[in-house]
Amino acid sequence: MFAAEVYAAVRQFVFIEGNSQREAARVFGLSRETIAKMCRFSLPPGYTRAKPVEKPKLGPLLPVIAAILETDRSTPVKQRHTAKRIFERLRDEHGFAGVSASFPVV
Image (tube, rainbow, N blue to C red):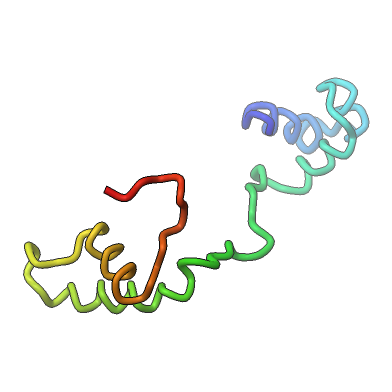
C-alpha cells in the first residue's frame, strides 16, 4: 500500500499539472497500472471481503447468544451473564465444544 502523500502527489501530477499517466509512472517509479488505479479512485480503496466470514462452529449458536443477551438487558447489572458464563451455558445446554482446542478453558 502506498502512503497517502504519494497517492496525493500522483493525482496532483496527473490532474492538476496535466501530465500523462505514463509520465507519472516514469517519474514516481510505479507501474502504469498502479498509476491508473490511483487516478481512478480519489481515496485509496481499502480491502473488502468478497463474501462474509464463515462461522461453522459458532454460527448456529448466534441466535442463542442473542437471546441470552436480550434477556440480560432487563436483569440487574450484577446478575447479567459474563462471557465465561455464556460459554458454560453453550457447552452444557447445547454441546458447544469451543472454537479452538489449543486454548485451555479455565
